[in-house]
Length: 355
Image: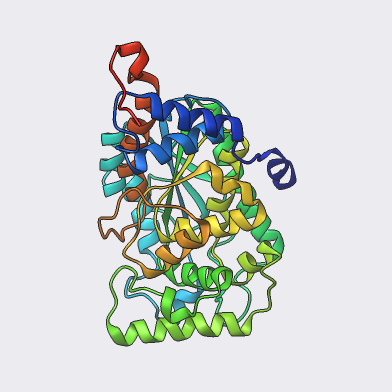
């Protein structure tokens, strides 16, 4: 499945990009006046290979949930069972992601790729919960590989499967979401590995830790990079060494959307670190991605810079769940709607500026 998906990913179409830029310049507005929204519309046209691009609606949010063995090192003040409890909250419709998804008219699917504890009674088996559990959490990445290579491939292919299912059900835009206590530690390790930045530069305070715990967290990330053997030219080896099951699944989700010609809106630092894995596997996948927002986590800016993506929203969010991507979705839709509905100078009989 992974090989088939990678083979199907194509870079942005040069003709569609040129047509989209030319069309933007003919619309009844000063050239460049819509700023980053023009870039988004052109990007989606190139990815779709047509101008104007298809409307990126309806949207589907997939929240990939998993636990992390590195939690045992005290990198988060939250107990590990919160992952399963929050999954239950998503399924009950009580999370911020649910509220934002309702605002964006996006569906919500929760994917268990490695939750360590059982869900509360009554939640297992719900239609909105997809079971792709690989294991009950990863191993402790500070002591050795977080997962085997086979598990890394299974995580990526789980994400591809979810992308295929959602697109088959009618989704025309995919939004990444995540849930996993301690997953910002794995994210920092991935970002440091792929970008070459020092762990202190890309490790953040996550869901809220004091300075002593933060210093310990940086040391754990540094130790993980020292004790594990991996080759950045072999992205799956990096994922297996220091990633999480949800990172692998999000990478596959991004790859799956790109292979199907459906744009993917990335959420925060977990999505950014997973996108580094996806881009290392298939560089052209970046042409199919939109950075929904820039997280308050420092590693996210480093990941977006490495990917060459400009975030649409910068509200100092650090929640995850897909919240930043959901907030960005109406902006992405607006950018494309302009291409479909706004008149050109010729069609509207409006005189263009001279020179």
